[in-house]
Image (tube, rainbow, N blue to C red; front, side):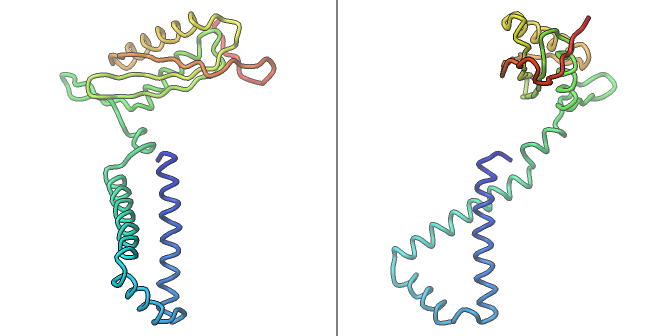
Length: 189
């Protein structure tokens, strides 16, 4: 669930809390029935007030549909772990989860001299699988050569180990590790 969805869900939940409190107070006769009938009569009497209530109800309806469809089809972070790439063989299908491909990519690139830390994300579409890598470098190794080496090694290792064709490996150098920050140094000697 992305940040926007969380924000909308928070507003939606707060509105439902207010509505629930109103209904509970009404059922316990804490709110006068004349107040409720006056509010309903105001909706029928004024088209502007009715329009405001209609707009609020329509927004709630659309948000409810969005959350309903999201929960039914599953989405976002949880399905990433279950998502997989499959390749047919003569004996049946082989399915490899995206998390497995990410682990192969991360383990491959950690061995490269000059890489301090990295994260990988795999995207699988109809006919292509791509890997996006975010790295922290040591600042001593030239970045263009290092990025190319990361791309080459990840592509070769994932294709060899998983038997998948990788369409692209994109590298984002997010930062240069500061000396003495405690970042783990991973080197192949």
